[in-house]
Image (cartoon, rainbow, N blue to C red; front, side):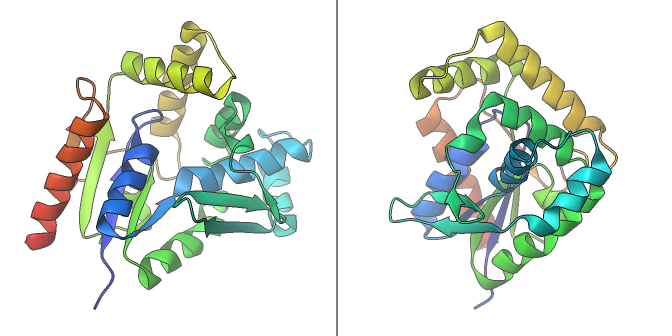
Length: 225
């Protein structure tokens, strides 16, 4: 049986990762957080002391990076950098901003494209990111564009950071999100946009359970077609 692929795209902080992971568990599919893969490259760049704005230096460092993706007993996707589990470290705000910069480089995106497509060819997946339905998996079984107002995304991010013990002022978070939105939608390589055949789901006024229900209903309906 041919693997089924669910592509979920959308801006930073829209809840893609949390919802995609939960939906994948309910469906029994492999969850692939592509944002975490880019964050791991960004983390490596920062750890090596490379200027994220130096595209040539970033690309030159890729051959030295051993990047691995695994799924633990907890069902979570774990990212390993040269054998070290950096799953928590890549969620820091400075890594997020760096990821927004390095993920815009065509060389970085092509470097990871084969890995992402291979996973979808070998497994039924729920894959989330910025260009899954438009570039990575243009023939995905179901395409969803998940979004929410910037102010709501900033509020959710603030609560998440507080729970992790790394609080950050709301205004700073909102500014970071707006900056990332602009960067992601204006980059030359695979800019963030809604695929023509993707279904828009706005979760601004929905809680987690309502958002999950909306996605599951949509996915099941599309898979029956």
